[in-house]
Length: 338
Image (cartoon, rainbow, N blue to C red; front, side):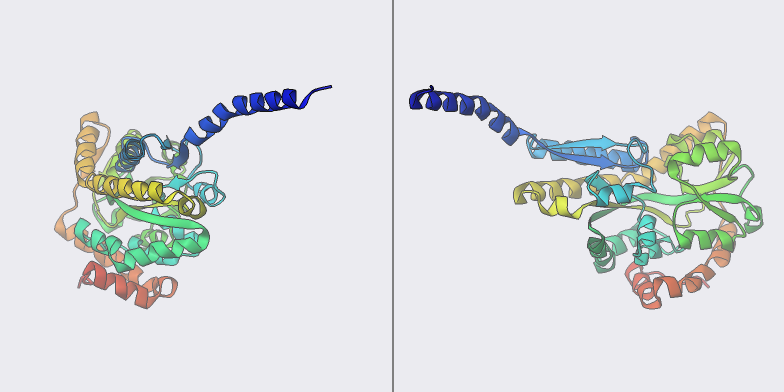
């Protein structure tokens, strides 16, 4: 029969064994799984890596950011659902993806030529209009944190794209945006919604004839290997929403959350500065490959493209809201071309 003192000694022994485990648990870092579909050397990928570096350094190891680029965890059609159920904690999806969730306001960014300069994009994104959009994500269990601008979108195909007539009949890959689909139809293109991770194979096998994206993706995803021509139309911006699982973000210790917000702010400044530089760098690399010709449309060709695509603004009023579009115009200082 065990004496009282024996039981006490055994209990103390158990506590002694448990103490290190408790200490280890207390020292275990908060892990953030940050998933995205782009390559690590794109503006998005570099921005995420900068956030990881700053977050881990500034929290002194209390936070660990595990980055999963190139659709390693989820394809672009799956990642938002994964975020909502907490399988990942942060994402950087194209803002076009928020439209199919019922938040159609974001699709105003996709209207053709609505942000003709980087400055006009930032005026909207950083101002009351863009911030009000991010706030609406909370109804879907998502915390909107920032916008990242990866530069202007352009078009690729296996034939030259100079005039509006050159686009007629092409099957073009687009992201999941009704507004971008309408853009393509305005050019008599057949839009095809395909996951980003499947674009290369779709171009290679002829499932689609071309696509619209940013030039850095054409380089890093090797689209230039299976596309002979790229036209720098700059018809819209490629914008990403940096988002987190709302419950996860709001339950972070206040000091940690503050540090992460600061790290993200600095990473946002860094990422937003990369778009123009990355386009120039990608253009030089693609030209050097000798596999794809890069074309800069003339002023007359761009004017023709605008005339063909501008009716989409009016067509989308029922979907996006006329007042919403007008508020965006004002924020971006956009003037409808004549």
